[in-house]
Length: 358
Length: 183
Image (cartoon, rainbow over the protein chains, first blue to last red):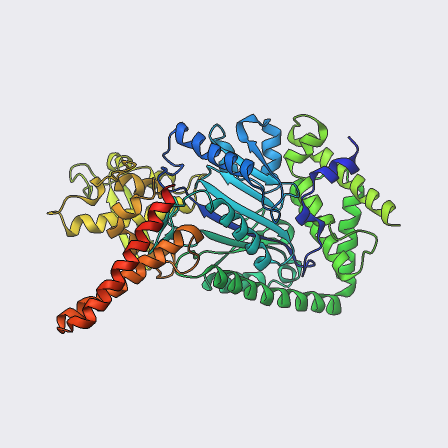
């Protein structure tokens, strides 16, 4: 398969990078945890119950499709090849936990991969919606449509006082986890991240690096999400998170401006060195690739690099993970071979983008 | 130093737990540590997650309860009638087995929820559309019954009769809705 075709197939719609605030916010995600009434939770249910839950969902997608949602495809996890499972995990469409117990689990995917509903993970249902840029409200709206659509024929485990009942008490109430993925090279370079993280934590929000932990996040990508699910309405959770994210965006912008003003030539040097590494390296590890991709993306946002599209960071971030590399190679690879493949894929991708945009 | 748990063997392990600023020191022997569950052992391991942390919090809870009230049946031994999960098992994995567990372990739940959700224990937010209607009716009925009580206490029987009729008609609607759902 040609790289072009492979990439096209590999991309989810959120990676196209067309949402609002896309220079800083990569994606918005909403997850709703739901359980069926009168069924034991997945931590202790029988295979029979697990199958019945999958059957009920199957029946639901067969009997009615809402135009707002479109077609959903059911994937039974134990029917997938190990590499296919890995690729779904790397695209954040399913969790590693869902794969662990794959005999009992399944997932529903929409064609553009904006929607994925995990069945029989920690809870019976995990409704997930993922959109490009900062669009938490819009994403929540879609998640609610799905939620209502399922609830039309299935009784949820719901308690007047406690709300939606979940397997883990950390999710009870709304069952809502809203999260935003942000690229924050300006705040990391100006060493402000270490002050910002504790401040965000105090607001009941959690910050994680998507590759690493805390301020050491690889590729300067951070995920910010709500911790509290009980005693706060869905709207408040999403509005609070959005307003914090908007403040972080403003700070990141001013950090970038300051960098460009005070260390213009050093910044330009750093960006083009990284660009040089990506377009010429023959062997590259995940960590180095992540750092360089972040620099190049910053270069694109600041206008130093004009020949590459913005979506490159999103794409390469996903495509250079080991599952994808092996899928592209058509079979398993040893770590050293992966580094060679990764370098080749990045080179090819950059050339392809340059030639197609010029 | 003698082990706090068995009071027989010498304590070879020394743990300090700090939860919400409260410091607790535990001195136990290796055997008791193993029996107490893998909580201590797993803590630094690769699989460490929010559930381990939560299990830690819950474990504290049961220790406090035990020392306070030995006369009552141990919380740890209570089992959920639906999924048969015991409180001890819940504490160990940090997850409930079914919706019924929320009722079974209701007494223990508030302090846990308060810690995890910044002091909140009750849901504010979405009500499922279909079964939500019934919940709203039930709330109305309960509120009216309170009003009814007040009227009776104050011997305002005419008003009480009015409210009683309202309650009856709402109850009929409520039953119809509940029944309708079964179809």
